[in-house]
Image (tube, rainbow, N blue to C red; front, side, top):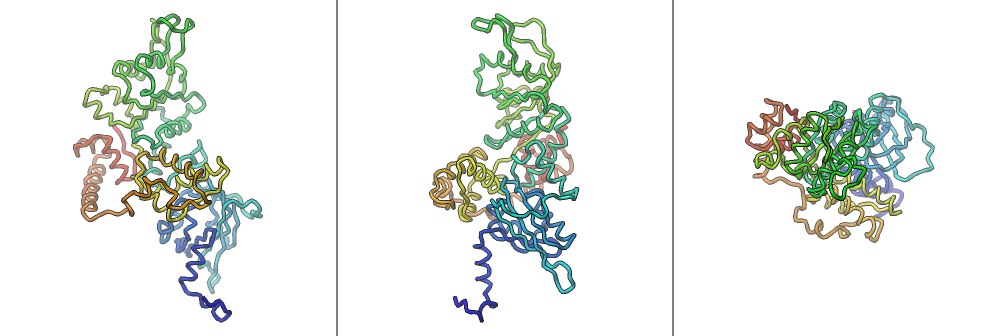
Amino acid sequence: MDWSKENYYHLSKETMFKILENYPNEIFVTDKNLNIIYTNSVSIKQYGILPEQLIGKNFYDVWDGSWYPTALPIVYKEKRSVTIEQVTFTGIKIISVDVPVFDENDEIEMVICGSQANINNYDISFSTVEDNSINHMIRRQNDSEFVDFVTNSQIMKSLFDSITRIADKDISVLIQGESGTGKSMLAKYIHELSSRKDFPFVTINCAAIPENLLESELFGYVPHAFTGSNPKGKKGLIELANSGTLFLDEIGELPLNMQAKLLDVIENKRFYPVGGTTFKEVNICIIAATNQDLQKLVEDKRFREDLYWRLNIFDIYLPSLKDRKEDILPLCNYFLNKFNEKHSQQKVLSEEAARKLITYNWPGNIRQLKNIIEKLTIISPKQVIQMNDLPNIIINNPIEAVTIGKFDYLVENFEKGLVTNAYNKHRSSRKVAEVLGISQTKALRLINKYCIREAEVE
């Protein structure tokens, strides 16, 4: 390439593109209507969002708290440059400089935003945002450790909106979803939003405690209740959770005899300790979680139907990562940032590695992703994690692109039409399940996928 002075003003599009794409900081450009007209691939590292997911969309359609505070509205309103310190929803601190470009009428033609991570020596001219609508978004993320839930998925954002509306209603909640999707964290989040947040949050894994010990763990026992027991007796987890929340993980593993006693606690707010003859009153909210299809267990007579409906006042289906692939990169960057700090590293994902991670189906969901990212943070030899650093199970994954063949496309559209029509008519996951002849769990998953809102459970 001839870089002589006469060619200085005649750089090719390819050269300009190469300069922008290899610039180490993010460049983000919006037009006069706040439509995104360009961003380079640094958006992958900072927000876990591919450039093609941003370009062509309006700023307000993609922002939704992905970084905060935002200065763009101030730039357009006051027609001036703004330098601001921000935090992305993946936990990365950045400095952003937003510069307006004016046309011949002194109107904003575009705004060029440049941002860089890990900078401590900037003179911040604008570090707070007065606009109430923007502050609302920031508060929503900061409240009750919301930032620990990293998502770009509309399904998940809709789910969190629904949870916010019911969290203070003091009702039983049933969380269903595959292993590793974050059911325990979601249960804690609901507790932190509730009126019981200042009282205990007690967890019991129904699959981890032997059946012969489960009753005494749940209900406690009176002094000398059985051979080998504590002569002073023992409080059970239900009593320890009084005034707070009892989280029953893996509720599908609860034995039938324990199910009957739990039902009595929910309905009458009382229980008998093992060996006791007088009941104890208790005031608790119950959140249950399972990776099984409880409705199928009810049909198989392995789970009480009356208990199922008492737990299922508000039901949540937590989708797997393969059903919300737009969350894979944000989660990768969130954990990468977390483990960089833990292990004193500065690792980043290459674009090639990032795109490969998206194609993987993550059968272990968030738990598997977290494990792999920590391993990569430790063992990858260079600062930039390349595709050949990834585990073979991901490298050898045959799915190279997220595509839908013609047959699958037709089937999915047909399925979408059935589910959407049924839900628009009945507004209930239970009714949709009945009409389509499927389980309520599957109905709820399909409603979340196609209707992008939580079902109302009658």
